Image (cartoon, rainbow, N blue to C red; front, side, top):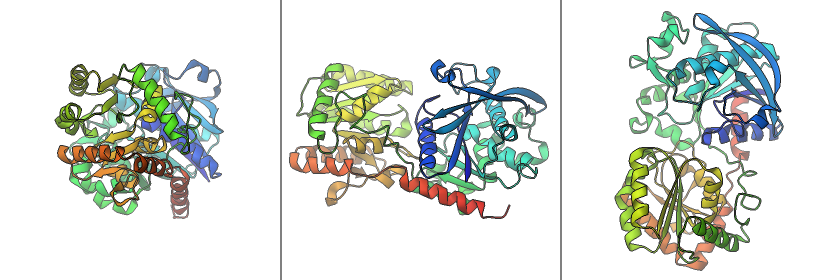
Length: 477
């Protein structure tokens, strides 16, 4: 079986968040199951020079972009035994940042066509092309419109994964023919509510759709979660499957993680966490107390992560509870400003760190006793899985992948603390339950050990993807 995994970023070459980690860990997990999985992504300016030095030039070709043709170079590199291809065009990708440019529609239309155009040139015909997120949503669209009846491409199946449905690739219909190169008689494939909607096009044309959470696949039928696409999701429910995201447990392993102040495992977490907490407190100028419970958050600072709930009750928590609160992230100005204000007001209890700082994120996981995720929706997060592996007991809202992986400990068998409604009082009550549990030292240690024993590896998820691919390959074209 041969798979081509199409992504706009992948660790260690280009990363802005969870998608990059998913791409590289997914490809490695497929390799472990003896599936030939190759990855393709743009050759951004941000790709480090030391990684570029190990790349090999494969070929160059001319790629159609609507009425014109553009140069495309193809480079190759190996990482953890997996082959990665890089699509090179300096006009489109030699820029600061991956996204947010005025011509993103054209940039990723070029990338999507280039992925399909390069295949005969590199002599790699995959059984399945697996695209991800709106930046690659045109891959199944272009395949369906322009390549599916071509003899060389015939029989390839397409899978598309929705990582978060709120990002849909919406643009004016004026770009459909002039930029995307889709003729007027076929534009209904990508049209939704009077605009181009790339995600809609992928949902319509891909042979299968997946999400990173079984719960999220069900939630998308509800208008509250689906950002306008619920009717389409319901109509195409027959080809939508939720497969839980996996965690790269080689990278995220507190016993070997050299970014930590001290390594530890389930048999030594008490000592290891004590060192990590003390050193993080020292770094962040918090009182160095081993007895105080530390609540951590590593999150984009946006409303969908539940920060509006937190803003309603954080002052109460810090004023009346003996606790330390540490948050790392960046995002909307109103939330960054709010956490700066709370840090000023509670200097010995609250620290806000801003930016994307991987080593600090890992130190927060290792130092925290609890990890808070009050998300409005959570399509496929691995943050709670990392928290579990590092012994930071999750406090989560019951939604998406959080519902699939965190179970309330009230029954004596769960691995965290869960609340249901999107409500600040329910959230703070879950926090208070966790703080009460922390005061029982013996019981808390049992809970931490149970959390660290959770199996969130790619083993089960990879098997489900392989079964999905096999099912597709046996279907008639």
